[in-house]
Image 1 (cartoon, rainbow, N blue to C red):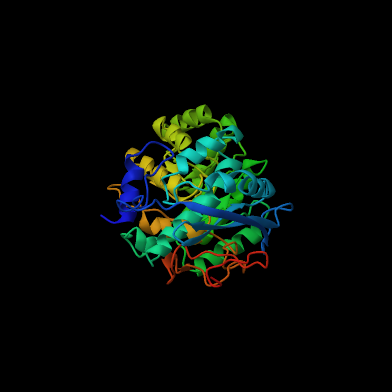
Image 2: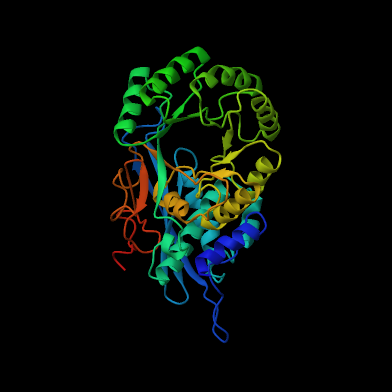
Length: 404
């Protein structure tokens, strides 16, 4: 069993929030490898297609870690609208000093750091910031093996299905139909669109127009982005069942576990539409809550929002234990690599990668080099690279893989 497959096995068997380690702490008689420094820089990446009037860029906090054996790694934290400066401050003021001297083996120190930061919260800003450190550690470990993340994990597949996605509730019906047509023309056979207009009759009209473009055989997923309460969700989904959605994403506030439990019961007794959640669940305990209680059938962890690859592996293990489908949220340059590596679970559909139109780091020109993945004809494949293959082009970042 490789170091990578060991990490997945540990994630499946371990407690929520932990995923074991990518390797050993060092050969007998040798000093353990530790972190010697962590630095972070805040970058604003403009969006070519704004997600809303006040969401015209995304915040990336690029990180760089050095280890006691001289190895280096590059990672990042990310937040579209709120909190980038706070994430940067937490990394620079609290995490950077606290990780020095701790183990540099991915997974070994994550739980201790999460507990160290828990006074600032068990999720949200705290886990988003932890991701910047965790991803840099994984990058260093994978680079040390001179392979890619998928190679490190001995990925069981070379491609995964991708689906077209967009932040499009503010689009006119004509603009939405044009976007869906672009996805069809690009070879996607599954797409996701936003719902949540004040009148469900308008949502239905828009979804019927989308379904007319897709035809009966392509998959349509709908995303309410937490806009409804329980009664409104119940009524609206009775109407929107007419377009045969594969899932309803975030119908209620993500904090409302009880509401999701009740809605899931109602849907099971009517349309049977599965509930998908995860982009706003920030630690493995919450994923376990939703799956254990039947509040959701599909989980969508965002690898940054949950705190990095280490907790993502734990969440994947939890999903597998419950027989739940997992589709990573956004960030295809990284989540796509993890989707390649996820172990197959008998009877459970394989993960799909979300491709938000014109929002990938490579498409936005944010990367200091080629993208580590390619999406074409409805599938994502890996391109040759070492480590995570993600570094950001910015004059305030003196350290990058190409310059080292």
